[in-house]
Amino acid sequence: MTMDQQSGGMDATKQDSNNNNTNESRETDADADADADAGSCGPRPTIREVLACQTSSWYSTFSNIVPLLNKNDNNGENDNDNNNNDNQIKLRKNITIKSVIISGQELLTIAPTFEKYLLYDGVKLPHDATKLSSCAGYSSNREVTFDSDDEDAGWGAGESDSEVEGSDSDSLEEKEEINFHFPQLNQKIMDILNKGNHNKGKGKASFGNDGVVPKLNWSAPRDSIWINEGTLKCHTPGDIYLLLKSSDFITYDILYNSLKGCSDYNDNLMTLFPPLELTLKKWCNLNPCQEFRCFIRRDELLCVSQRQHSVHYPYLITQSQTTSQTQTQIENYVMDIYIDKKDRIWILDFNPWSTNTDSLLYDWNELTSMDNDDDHDEDRIRITEAGGSQVKPDPLSSYRAPIDTVNLASMTQNGNDSKQFEEFMKLCQKRPTYWEDNDEDSE
Image (cartoon, rainbow, N blue to C red; front, side):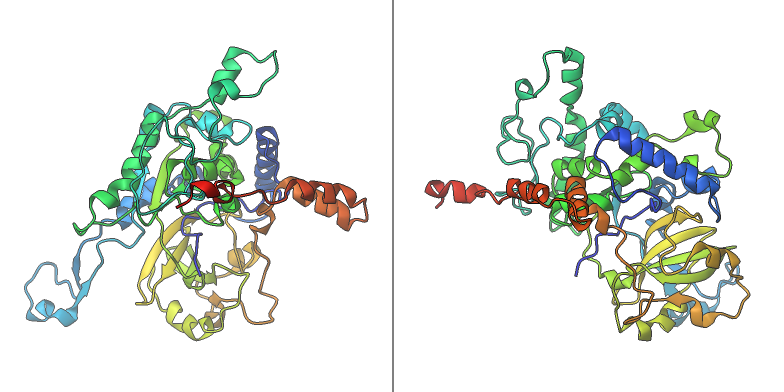
C-alpha cells in the first residue's frame, strides 16, 4: 500500500466539498473559509508561526544533522567512557525526506507569470510541458527530454496556439494569456528529475526514477491526485503542473488564506507575505499506517494521532506504547512524522497549532483543554479500532470525482429525473486507447 500524503502541509479543513473548477468560485469559497475560521472557537496562530511552517523555513535544519553526538558531554573534557561506542548516539545525516526547493525569488525570476497561470480559469498545460507520465508510451526509466516539436505523447497534445477556441470578440491579449510558457522552469524541473539518472552509481540519491512530489509553501495537491492516476508521484513537468493547476488546496496557498486567518493579521501586512515557492520532494513508498500527527505544546509532546483515520490497522495497538516513548522536540507546532521498519522517525511536515490543521482523531476542544501535566498516558496516542466510532470517512473522498458527476448523482438520489445522469454517463464511454487505435503500427 502506498502513501501519498508525505507532503501534506497546511490542511484546508474548512473548504467546501463541492469544489468548483472556476477560479472565481474558488476564491469566494476560500475567503469565506478564512472568515469562518476567524470566528470559530479554537487556537489561531500568529503570522510568524504560519511562516515557520513553510518548507524553506525548516528543511535545512532537519536535512543537515551533526553526524555524531556524545550521550555524556562533559563540556569538552576527555573521558574514556565518552569514547566508548556504547556512550555515543549516531545521528543520521538527515531526518526528513530529500527535497529541492525552488525559492520564491528564483521562481519569480524564471517564471514571473506562474502564479497567474495557477489562478487562471480552466486546466491547460503550459506550452512544451504537455507530456504526462500517465499517458501511453511514457517510461520512468528514461531521461526526461525537452523537445518543442514532440507534443504527441501528452495531455492536450496537438493543440497549437491558433487552435485555441475563442469568440470573435476575444482580444489578442486574452489569447496570449491562455498560452503560458515556462521554458526556464521546465528546464529547472527536468534538471531536478534527471539528477538521479546522471548520478546513477555514484552513491547519490536518485530523483529521476523515483519521481517527485510537488508542494507550494504549505500545501501539496492531495485533493487532485484523481487526475494523476491516484498519486502525487510526478515524472515530468507536465505531471507537476497538472496536479498544481487542478488543486483547490494549492489555490488556498496562493490566496494566502492560512495567513489571513492569523490572530495578528491585517490588510497592511499583505505586501510582506512571502512569494510562492515550489518544493519537489523525493517520492517515497510509505506505509500509511506508520504515519502519525504529533500535537506539541509548550515544548512538550501532548498527544499523537494516527494520520490515516479512515482505516483500522490491528497491529498498531501493540505498537502504540513504543511510539509514545519516541522523543520529539518542537515548539508550538503540529508535526507529521513517519516511523519506518527500523523505528527511525522521519519528519514529513509541520503545521501550525491552529483549527486550520486537521485534528484527526481528536477535536480542538480536547486539545486546547488538555494539560501536559495531566495523567492521561492511555489517551496520548489514538488509533482507529475495529468497529469503533474513531474510524472516520476519508476527508479527500469528495475531491475524487468531477463536480458535475457529484451534482448529477445528488439529483438522482433526491428522486429527480435520472435521465440527465444516464445521458452524462454515455458521454463518458470508454474510447479506444492509443495502442488499440493504432494496431497496424504495433510491433
